[in-house]
Length: 170
Length: 170
Figure 1 (cartoon, rainbow over the protein chains, first blue to last red):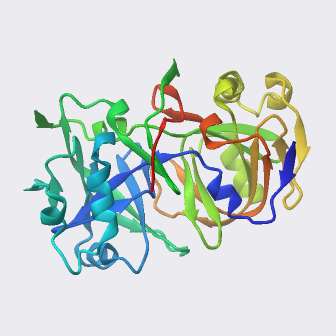
Figure 2 (figure 1 turned 90 degrees about the vertical axis):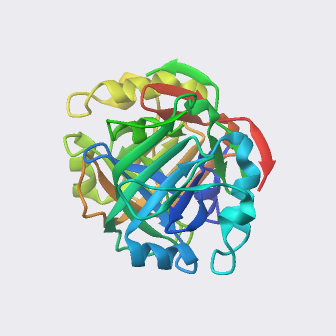
């Protein structure tokens, strides 16, 4: 039985799950559930960041960022990076992961994540809600040869999930 | 062993999976894999549409749209709506689903989908790649009382998937 919701946020709560990524800017790490591809050509992605975050300041200062895709068994890394602000601490040290230098941007990337995507900010979406969305053109991509989509970590409000079972080819 | 990819699109191919939705505008239906939440407040979502699609024309004409979340067992509906243009045919008829009138916008919604979200276009992102992203403020939400996130359908380039197994509370 379908019913009309009183609370419009129910439409957002109803969404199933999205990839969870770690955004690196300069030497900081932020956990982000607001992430999607943006365009196939030029290959680009987008990430939504709340303006009270340290990463928001860093994004506006550097205009470059890394997208690091964690595996489903790296929830602790994700939790650690999401629980404290990089204003106070070195998250690489706190989370026990290893920074390595990006090749096309001036930022660190996370060695232990199987995929690292280097991006240059090419647009900031100018309709502002709770998040500022940044569009990033992909400049370089590092992928571990044992990585497969199934290994990634999914998230949506309140829930960490695995990537779902393959059903059919499109 | 991590390696630097020659093809930057590898960064997009590496993404695990995203919710698959059906976008309704007026009396037409379009399958969309480019969909995310946009902001918690005002509650809003966004959808990316390629400019050669009939739905792109309709979006610009009506500035309103419905997001219909199909279940994982509705792949055939999704395939049908993704395989033909609404310029030629009535997709509701072709796919064998039932239109019902939205309450806050002038559009049809799909009765057989467990979640329907009515949106008003409040922004068109003006950095254009292969997709035009439309930001929609949520105006009304219909949810079937037996719907749960696990029932939705996920998709990313080449692959339909289920929603992944729950791992941990956030």
